[in-house]
Length: 212
Image 1 (cartoon, rainbow, N blue to C red):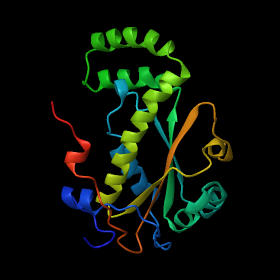
Image 2: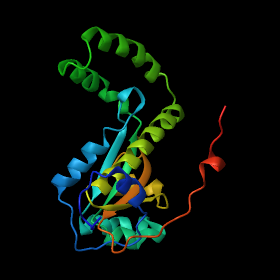
Image 3: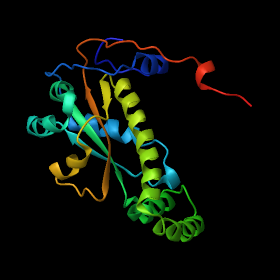
Image 4: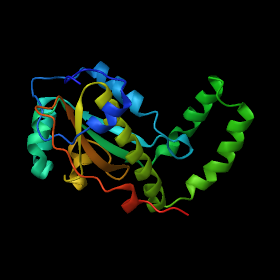
C-alpha cells in the first residue's frame, strides 16, 4: 500500500500496522478527518455502552511543545507526528447514561421500557462502585477503543505508535483537565511514517493459547 492511501483490505490493515518511530512533519491531518477517525474508533465495545473514553487531540505546535517535556524518551515521535491523541478514561462516564440510553430509544434501537429497566438496575450499581472498581472497567474499555483507533488510522492511510512512557500524573493538569476525573491511558502518535517501521516477532498461538 502506498503511504497515505486509504484501504479496506483487512489483512493490510492488521499485518501492515507498525509502531512508527518517525513521521513526516509536513503531513497534517485535518480536524474533519481526525473527527471521522475518532468517530469510527468509537464504535468499539464498552461496558454497558458507557463509552468512557475521552480524547485530547494535540495537533498544534504549541500543544506538542507543551507535551514534549512530559513524553520522556518519545519526544521525537511527538514532535514529528501530525498529532498526538491523549486517551483518557472518564470516572464520571455514567453521567452520560441518560443521553446514551435516551437517544437509543429515540433512534429506535431500544424500547422505552427496556431503557427504564436498564437504568433502574444500573444506576444504583454504578453509584456504589469505588473509584478503583470503576477504574478497572474504564481502563479496559479505553484499551479497546485505543486499539480500534490505531486500526482505523491505518485504514485512513496513517501510521501510529502507542506510548505508555510519559508523565501521566502531570498531563491532565498541563492541558487544563480535571486530574481526579480523567485517568490517563496512553498517548497515540499519528501521522505519515517516514519508513515502514520494523517487523517484530510474535509468539505462536501454541505459546499463548490453551484449549479445554
